[in-house]
Image 1 (cartoon, helix red, strand yellow):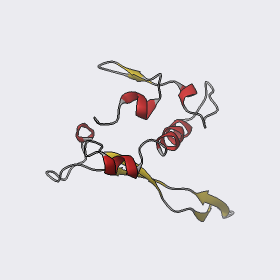
Image 2 (spheres, rainbow, N blue to C red):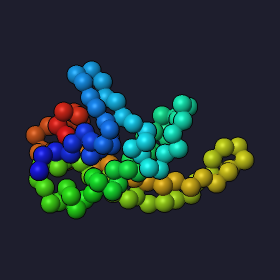
Image 3 (cartoon, rainbow, N blue to C red):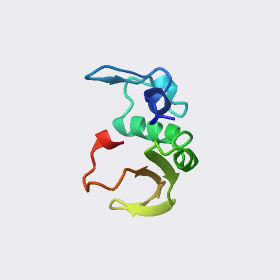
Length: 109
């Protein structure tokens, strides 16, 4: 299999040109789509969607795959002046390439 496709990662209605990527919010089942979704909510929806497709099992089964997501640890931290408890959920993004270079370059994945 080839590297993960545009539609696998960004949803079945995703398109791209030489200068832009267009994604459809409807392709993210966990997102409540609105005209004012934050960048954080969109990134979260993308990561949550890809936990199901960019798995370590898919990565292990196909040497052409270069990215997989895995569960991190849930923790709780106090924030702010009143130490409000926040839940921190981790999604670990793993980028793999042949060891030729020390820089992160998106063209390698």
